[in-house]
Every structure is written in structure tokens, then in C-alpha cells.
Image (cartoon, rainbow, N blue to C red):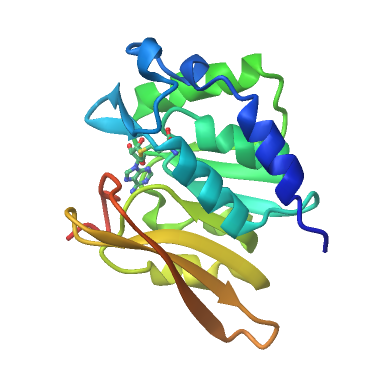
Length: 194
Ligand code: SAH
């Protein structure tokens, strides 16, 4: 497997973040999380890149994403994987993201509305899992729905402080966790909400 690191970085650099926002578009150039309504945020760009590089998506792979939000992270994943299955619990955000990603021509994205904490059982297993909201613990359903050789990037902690983890499942099914960063995401609602 070849890392797509260079290609991901150059694609990311030419992305227009403001396209994924409805208001405050003039702030899109700053490296901050920004509000997208419904008390949710479009993630900090440098973090989107860091998380994507850590996840290391591959051209034929199936990716699960929790928290579609604006669709910004979804676009980056869809550009570098086989297919993306993305779950969002707020219908209006999902509709907007769907429209934008359609306008960009992506045809390898499936959308689901609801609590993503339990993953997407019918479509499992996944080679890569990206979680863009903070869970109080790693959902066991996501670990089960991960392929051998798979990777997951997930922020874990309270609503005030979280650690960003890279969890890898080796070919024997054993899990290995690496701490990547200290981060602050909006909470993952539903089953694993504190
Ligand atoms: N990657 C997105 C991040 C959005 S913030 C972006 O950069 O735009 C996190 C998103 O996760 C929010 O849109 C929120 O509604 C969604 N979310 C929170 N809990 C969820 C859950 N249990 N299932 C699905 N989506 C969830």
C-alpha cells in the first residue's frame, strides 16, 4: 500500500473551505473551527488534514465517517478512497452537505441520517473509520465493524478535553492505540454521550 500523503496535501491546499459554509465565509481562511449552525462546527482545517493523513485512506477502501457536518472532511476522504459511508444526525446539515458534495461531482458517497455511534452494520466491515465528534469512550460497535488491517481516528474524552487517538487493528485482530494530539470537538451525541 502506497501512502497518498503528498497527493492528499496538495488536494487539501486547493480546497475552498468557504464552499462548505453558509455564513462567515470570510473567516474560512483562518485555521479555526467555525460555526455551521445547530451548535455544530466545521472542523479546524489543520486538524482535518492531520486526521486524514493519520487515517491513511487507500483507493479501493471503504471508509465510514461519523459526523458529516459541512461535508468538508467527507470530500477529502471521498477523493482518496473507494467509497465513503457518512452518518449525520442533523437532517438539515446532511441535506446541505449532500447538495455540496453532489455539486462537486462525488459519486462514491452514501449518506445516512441518525446516531452513528453504532456504526453502519449493513455496510460493515470498514477499512477506515473517521470520527469527527468526541466520544466519551470508543464505541465497541465501531471496533467490531473495523476490518483487519483497519484504522480508526477518533477524539475521546469529555466535552472540555479530548485526546485524538489512532486505533489500528492488526491482521490477528489485535488493537493498537497511538495518541496523536489534544483536541476539542463537539460531542458525539447518542449512545456514547456522557
Ligand atoms: N467533519 C465535520 C465536523 C462537524 S462537527 C466538518 O468538518 O464539517 C461534528 C458533527 O457530528 C456535527 O455535524 C454533529 O451533528 C454530528 N454528530 C454528533 N453526534 C453524532 C452522532 N451520534 N451520529 C452522527 N452524527 C453526529
